[in-house]
Length: 254
Ligand code: DBV
Image 1 (cartoon, rainbow, N blue to C red):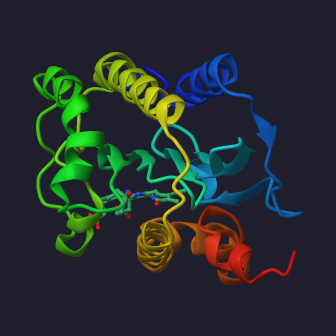
Image 2 (tube, rainbow, N blue to C red):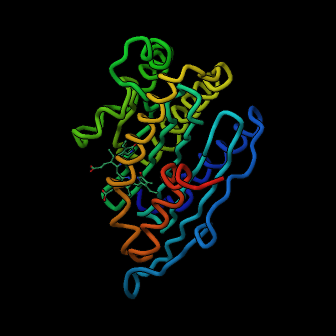
């Protein structure tokens, strides 16, 4: 239905996530580099002109190094909520990863608890098997989205919800319900998580986090879009200085 408006499609997801996290976690602000809290640009020509606003949100807790969201609002056919939780390096927790994307071509939804150790069966038993019932319940309504980059596969769990709904109403209902269930299950994991102290495990976690982070920063599917809107310099700084900032944080002398 072309009458309906998608302009705030993911705002309820963002509002829900922040309110829900506040209800269960002791959220502290996480610094957003100056100039990256929000950016806007006018794109397109004539009647097709749209303002594209990108807003950043970031928090931290004792167990979660960075909880951050990028919300892109550019009218009916450009809405993105990219929401990722990066645990501290002394927890074996997976990443919470949500990439909710609406483009002129349609909706693209990626939702997962992205594993540190994809092929480790003990890890799967701990962090994937418990969410398989949620995955199967939602997958019934959200069919597999088809091909995605082969090289990205190691970073997704067997409970990866990947779907391209035709209808905006499906995003508002089924996808929103899945998002809530995954976030709840993730916070349950966080609640139960105990700090890792074994030095070998700590090294493995750090390596796995860096592997994930480097992949995401290098292959960020939003890079082209951000460059067109806001220029190359802003985009690279946004990616490495905020969206995927672990390497920078590790090299800062505290
Ligand atoms: N994706 C991001 C960030 C975004 C973002 C930070 C702030 O990681 C948006 C914005 N994702 C975004 C956009 C597109 C996608 C696509 C705008 C569409 C790009 C386009 O079509 O031009 C999951 N996101 C995708 C795709 C996947 C994901 C698989 C399709 C890519 C393709 O077909 O090439 N989430 C994404 C991903 C990982 C993840 C690749 C890897 C670990 O966690």
